[in-house]
Length: 235
Image 1: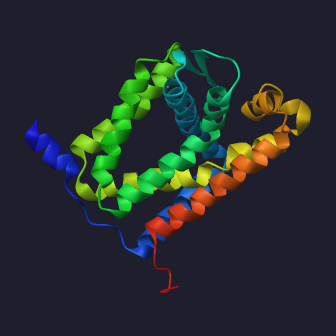
Image 2: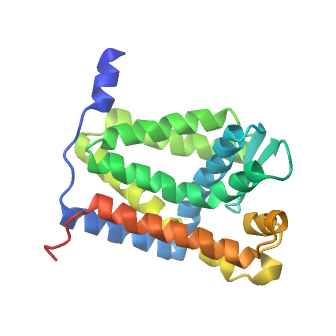
């Protein structure tokens, strides 16, 4: 156990800036291209629902379960006071979670902890398995968790760093897109969404909630890029 802990906490070589930018371009293509976006969005949904779940527990709510659906949507069920700051924080946390996890990932990657990041994601998947309440959601977590676990356990350091870098970029770059999609649906298409529920709780229009959440995600992207590539003077 000690040897395993020493392995996952050891530092790996931090990729050079040109390589990081190349990985970011690949991630951007995966986010923008319709053929790959569905899979990427499914991963974003997992993080989104995990954000709801974590904040629900921190706010003192009783977590009932998480469901993931084949249309890449999801829902987190919890019991507690239907109004108040805790409910607002829980609803807002979903769209903020990918960017926040992306920032954490960028920080770990910049510190040389690519393998530690992968194992952290595997551990998070295992915890989420305890709360999933539908078969499709269980399958998604098993596939994602098994893939990351296999890479963390069997792959060499170079491949581990490549995967950790790509995951980090995907989290940072993908976090704004669901909000942009929601913004384009119009008021009718936003009914029942997190911003719509936030509007009902606070009296602030849902479109303003979307813009605020989008601004935070874009700020997270900027900070994440600066964390990954602090010196772009070589360009």
